[in-house]
Length: 338
Image (cartoon, rainbow, N blue to C red):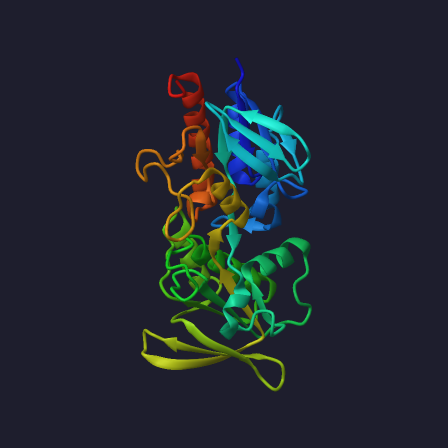
């Protein structure tokens, strides 16, 4: 008999898991709070390390969703544990009796306004990585050519004061990708990357870093930015420390891009409270086992995929989604529910 599976979240993890579960013969109900599927991927332009179109990638994921019941602009009103299933009441008035639940609630971007010293929301020339990516996607880059552009890594990541000591895993590669792209648009501009440590660990990521230096002449400065202020002529003066040369540094820029890191999803947290799911110190969900059962929660029948358990790259997210689909199928077709 077909089993009902509730997938919460219509980002890449939710889409990939839902389509795989459908192909395994299950009845899949996916809910997404936004008007469109795709999560953060729907707002992105190109993906590292190869500059692949985010839209094409998302279209490929959505093309596999045949047979999946998708409810848009829908949220969980309540989610209760029954004997061997879960009863979910949705905001659209529909009630779902699910044999298994997959949480693919993703992540929220760190609110850059919390780092007041960087001037986001105060100075016009300070934007986030998400703002820049949207500008690329919509073709709305500044018409006035900037002379100098800076990228600040680890905004809200690896930062005890911001409440997130962990690495967000994707910021370094995103910064290098965006720095190369902005240099393509403004080839005469000076482009700087202010970093703590460059974590270019993935396939071809190091190639992208070398390309940024050799082909695009992007300057990498090891040191955290301490302060941003506006000059009399409306430009941005950035104070930092070059830790390699052990000296303070001041750079005047026209545009500063803050690489906002990943934080646990607020919507995911609400669902976690409904089910009393455990979380790590950083607020992301705790897996049943960090080696053998990453996709399982500590509650029978509830599974995870993607960034709800911590920062992930897109390939990691898709791999986890496929794995979660297999784990759910195994759970439903074996004696684990007995």
